[in-house]
Image (cartoon, rainbow, N blue to C red; front, side, top):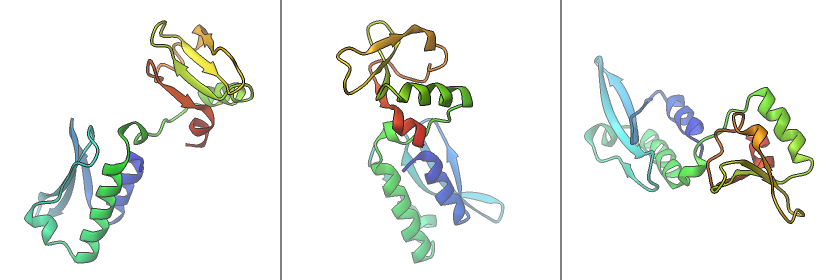
Amino acid sequence: MKTKEFIESVEAVGYAVEETKSRFVLKSSSNGFANILATVSKNSEYIVDTDNIFFENLHENIRGYLASTLYAYSQTPIAERESLELNDYERMILESLHRDYTYIGRSKRSGLVVVGGIYTSAPRALDMFEELFNWVKPGKSLVIADLLND
């Protein structure tokens, strides 16, 4: 589950999500006070905390829905939680690269953006895309088709 989907799912049933450095905090408002219902880790998988009276007092259907949402998000690998928001120029470049290449990545050694494909024996380094694709982390590669479908 993507972070955006997680937040939308919680807000859809009338609760707020506050982001801290290490977790998302689900809150309800009553009598002008924000009550913490539950938390889920941003940096670790499978870390959820629903052990408080405000969560316990929710209607069973809402509690079940929120628990399912929290656990689904907590099980999502950290690297898969964020969606990339491509600008029009990035999308256009990726679409043209996708004709010949399968993945885009960044070399650990040189730091250059690298594209490659199933049938290429050696990936091709593209120093002209350093600024444009600065969100590609060193040593990581991403499937271009997946980026275009997000």
